[in-house]
Length: 210
Image (cartoon, rainbow, N blue to C red; front, side, top):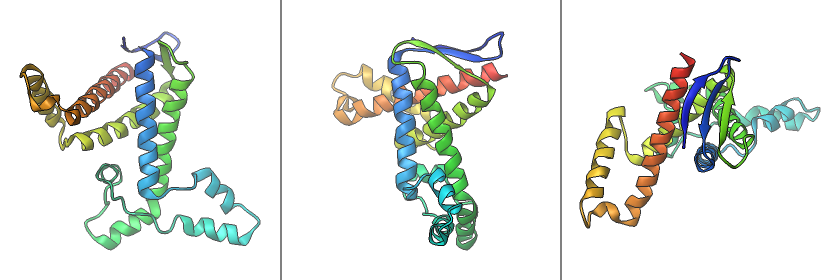
């Protein structure tokens, strides 16, 4: 059973999660990172590109330079939410993507990797999860990005939409023979549960930081 984040006397922020909760959070963080890479065509890591840019081989330096020049426009609806157009003007939006999309993606992927490392370090069973303030900010950003992806999959446009989805789910659970009992909605129920867990965890961390 999860326990909310609390500030400890040593300054760390600590919560308690069971093994399944940690595994789910790590899994959705990894899946979000994989989705970003796949949709934006980020085959090479930022570290590999940085090494190529500093190579003594002029061809590798040239390849590294052009690797960031033509960023791919997101096609997945969730990734479009994470990397929205910075301008209504197509040319300006493309220029913004060329200049900043790689750095934005690198930051998001670094946050997601940090969350996975933090959780993996606690082992598979129930345990406390402790972070410092810098890690807390990484965790908040990563949780927010994962929630945006899940919200897209649930068809949520605004925060209030989730209350409606949850209400419909609860009604469906009480109605015998409801369409919510089919395999498709069993899957959506899992997404709803994960969304709720991440929302609760994010809110508790924000309160602890305050």
